[in-house]
Image (cartoon, rainbow, N blue to C red; front, side, top):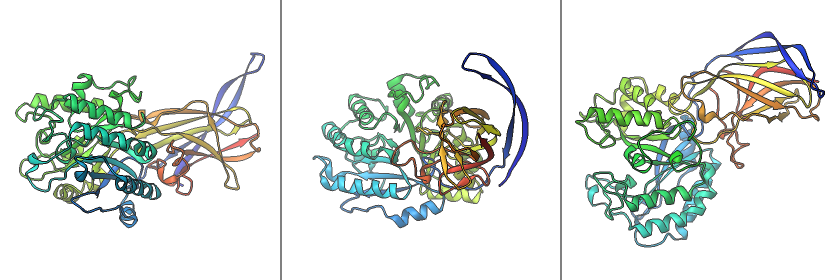
Length: 472
């Protein structure tokens, strides 16, 4: 195990039941940890694979376990699914849709994946996307209503959902039924109705990503989210961003509107930089032509990914951009740093603790990633006995990793009450960051792995901190 242990003495104050104070010296161990450069799968972040399993033209292409296993072997545990509903533009969804979706969701859960969902009514394969056909508003709203029970039933494996449904590829432009004002990107009444129907369809812990920052500003004003607003479950706190033409041009082909207005481009980037502290940013590249050449270089791509706080990026598209990143040797850096990359610097804990007493552990953590976690995440301390039994502790304080922003070392104090029936003995201190969803909380594939050497136990999803406590 790559760590260094030192002992320090501290003076602590204990309060008796009568209110008297007693001072006693207690020895703490402090352990420092070594970083890891490994690329490994972690939930809700990183490169994702994209599949279109339902339906393109008349073909149903189900997800496959071998495909998912191959992706996971490359450090990928995230998929974006394009569910194309072209045959349902004028009618309700039928049982075949729900059978297919349930099968896909269950397969993803069984294989340790989370999903970025998008629904669309077309998938253009040429430049004639202006003639792409979507569905009228009443049909779209009916489909969202029909999908609501399924979305809630499988919300545990939904990383986030892209707004979809409107226009070509569900990208919120070129709508044949005027579901959005375009090219002005105006949020008209149909667009607003669809977006709020999607927010209602998902539980308040899940986010919707929209294609243009102007859409969110039109709904909630130009000020980005503040820490006090973050993760509140409000509509504003649940709307993030997806970018379908990252680095394609100075405006990312329309994301920042006017290519000749550099202050406007800088303004929208600054807005996303601030807003994306607390919401998801995801998407893909789409162009490697002359217009993109100065932007897709590793130097510029790394700077923009960090500044805009990207959590996930398409592994499959655009292939020429991905190939360039491999040639210029930044692909692996991007793979490691998309989203969060949490790392322990050191930890401190007392050598002794009493049953029915309080155990205080100090963790110095840094996030080396481009972004922070955007979905709820638990923090669990446990004591591991000599016979390998884990005793999870009830925490008196609940740290929230969603506020562990990049490049800011922080001391996280975790207090736990030791149960009075815990057997006396010597225990190793363990740390886990599991998924809070009941179906996933005990699955180590859905726990966050820290970027340290020698701590991770893939059997349990816990990290062995190298700190031992004598319980009396």
